[in-house]
Image (cartoon, rainbow, N blue to C red; front, side, top):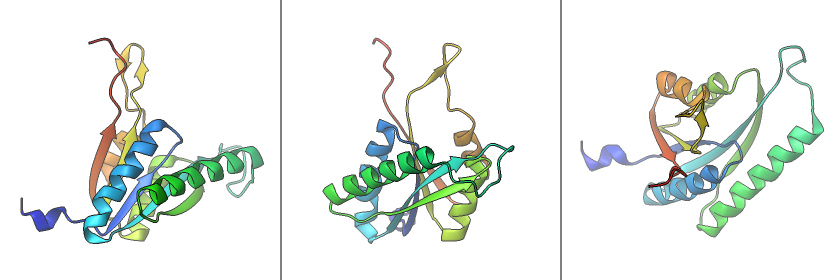
Length: 149
């Protein structure tokens, strides 16, 4: 693979508020500096089907805005600017793919916390959806396991 293929111009960074997001934004800044890429951090506020899609649940919105402000601060520490967006949708996976298409992203960088479900490592449902449907490259940045070595 030629090195010029690994230059990214538009990076989409879905965030959920974990430590993995903080590490992922630092990595996104590192990758973006090389080609002066644009980075967009997006948070998807999932709305239950029983509610209208445009409902405003203040505690959820405030929490998401604080988290996105934290992402912007981390990027500033790295000497980079990150655009942020709060999206409301029924499902996070399709909303992230739609955002990647709309923004013409050439990389989706996902920070993944080490989680287990029923004793097994689990990516949940959103990450596999992104991997299956992404219109561009996807980079998973998983935190180390907390398991004894």
